[in-house]
Image (cartoon, rainbow, N blue to C red; front, side):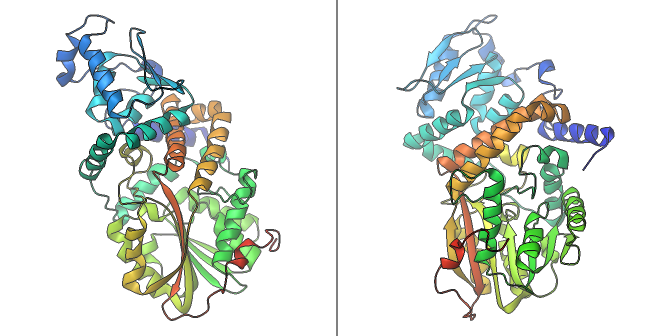
Length: 454
């Protein structure tokens, strides 16, 4: 969908202001960034002149690397002095451009690494994914560091509370960056921005996303004439797919204006407007009665304090034999999203544990029938996205700017590492009404030929 130059300029300005809104740098253009050491760090600066490195600088660096388990990386300081850590060949080279950067990172490693990398004050040469995996391995290996890290993320960050107005602001921050941007690196046909499904690891991202859509529809046992409500529909690809291939009627809710606009245009273009209705509204305002409830990739934006509310919405809108599916990023045990990603990329995001997710179902007597973890499928999905992102990096830089590109490269690469190292999970939960006996006797219906419903 073409966008005017003014719209593109507005998107660039909005995106840059979001990443740099808290005064990390004066301008989003990396080439013009001038780092200023915080007042509390001046005493360290005086220990060495010019580009030299002090004994304290080396001591701080070594202690920092020891804390994260001495991963297999090389570090270069601002005077080109090199340090080797780990026992194996380095997977990447980390470079500090100035002394102030080292102490800035020390002050809040989880948040400041993303800030400093995005602004160009830290650089990583080599495989970014393997670099992030090494950091995760080091923290997991160092038991004391892992415990301190758990305490830090538990008590060091504000709780996630998403009112209707706050949720709309958060979604606008991430999903209204411009459809042209997302078209460059998601699958082109359905614009799926959620975990794909790879029954064969060699599938293309387009094939794997189609396989995911079938997988979800089969889990829901959709049949012609069913009425489906979708909470958080993205660009509307699942709703159109269900209507086109399974003969159902869908009412899909979303609070992203750009996504809803795109979805409606696509439904009109595909002749599906009579079967799919896109509603620009919050899921809490869902009304009507439906055979099926589905939510793919939205629960992360709800916040645990509203899980009971989501359960009440499901309870009131399902028929007596209704069933549903919730697909969400999660964790093995409760813990917040990475601080930098939550602040800069996904504001208001929280990946729940299975225990926390039960607050949706148990109070409303919704019976969980099936739980599947697609963790490694999401890692592979992100690998495909990162390859396409880098393929179109020049176009993305022109749309946004270099700092935005660095931030999103870190987000995609770091997310791959989070899934491969099991920091994050991907849960699909199938449920139905308490007394419904319309249940499948096996899972055989999930693995039929994918072309059967074409």
